[in-house]
Image 1 (cartoon, rainbow, N blue to C red):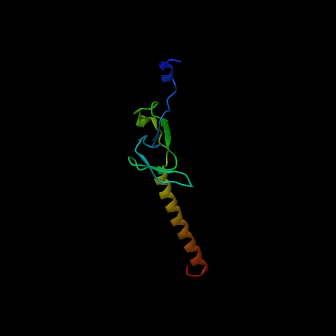
Image 2: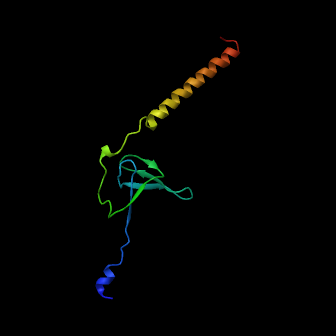
Image 3: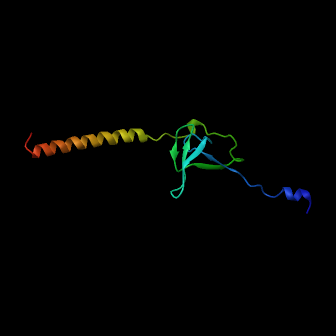
Length: 105
């Protein structure tokens, strides 16, 4: 075996974590342990257990275009606001029913 054959040994690829929302590599782990890792993106504020892991050679500096991502109608903020409105309406309904049974109305 010549010296050039030793260079043909497959190199270990380093893995790079990417944010699933903005594809940034500016990710850190504020918590971990028995429950698994929890990641935080410093660029977009994403927090969660899911990140994308690429070989750094495969995606060196590539970022998908913003128009590649599909927006899902009713993001989590609007769903949360709708849920709060629903809770308020249910609470008002229950108050009216309870006061009606008590004979106030």
